[in-house]
Image 1 (cartoon, rainbow, N blue to C red):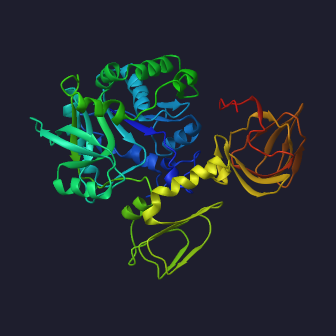
Image 2 (image 1 turned 135 degrees about the vertical axis):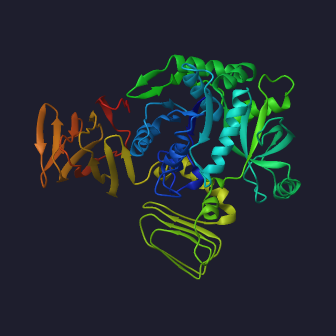
Length: 486
């Protein structure tokens, strides 16, 4: 039986700011190992290769359009083909994302079983997870919509819960779902755990592509119609599948749980496909807030999780992460300190959920710290702001071998380029010339220009911008090999 992993990578991870930014979210960051969360998710099923009962397909990834090059590059780094990436022009939650993936898979074989995994989960015991997948395969083939419920080890208020119903007459551990319940308060969560009847809602699912589309037809026809139209009117763009933005923008926004799974349990006698839950005890964690990262991290003798250049003196049960500069903490307990090049977060662990309020304020005030790090990745390489003032900005630019920037101009700024390493192939107006190490050139305001690296080593240069406005949106593109129009 074919098993199609579907990785949902559309979130922005605002509660893990300042490491997670809107254009470089948590799933693209190595939070718990040397691999990013996306890479860990994509590689999670490698142990199923060679299983004669399962034909494991390359993953389908549904991601934000703005993350497409980072997603493709991270998959390439771990040897996963990046030929099944579906781009969302705007976030519409998990139900439309899964529907787009199901439509893509059903075009080849509607009976393929989908394994839906968010890109930001931890699963420590993959052997136990594989056993649950085998149970999920059996049920999915029979038409069930399956979710995985995590056996709770504490009364968490940050997760939704699933109440288990009757045991299924199968050789699996699955039970029918009695009902889904919202994130509870502390007393209610404790009552759920004490009863033994509830599991945490993991947000992972299994079902045949046809089963999901059947339920969408029955329960969410407007959402399905929008997704079908957006998908049909989409197009392949440099290896990505770009759905129609205008149509998809009109799609209702809802989660898999709200849109379908809860309605199936509420109308079980009318559902074409029953819903079941498989209890899972595989060291699962949803890394949604900094306190969760402390819980799953390797702790020192004082209960601290430390990463980077950190001194923790008389500090206990804290999470201390240094990304760029040294951190020293003295006499602290139960705190979170996260340092990056342009921002520092200090919070009590009990208020980890409130970090998103910081991001909301940064966004409302149009501050750049919510959007990007100082080091910004582009499909051609990266740039990093190293100094700025009212009418100038200095950047360190790296252009990968064989890469080139778009043919562009700026209405409000001029640029000076100083090459540090490599050789720049420069187009400036009608001129085309080379700039080598320790040489420089000048791009006047309003002149079309392009920068290329035709060499075999990275091109590194310092760019000094000067003018009345230095924002990244002061770019008029005429040609771009990466298909960007802004």
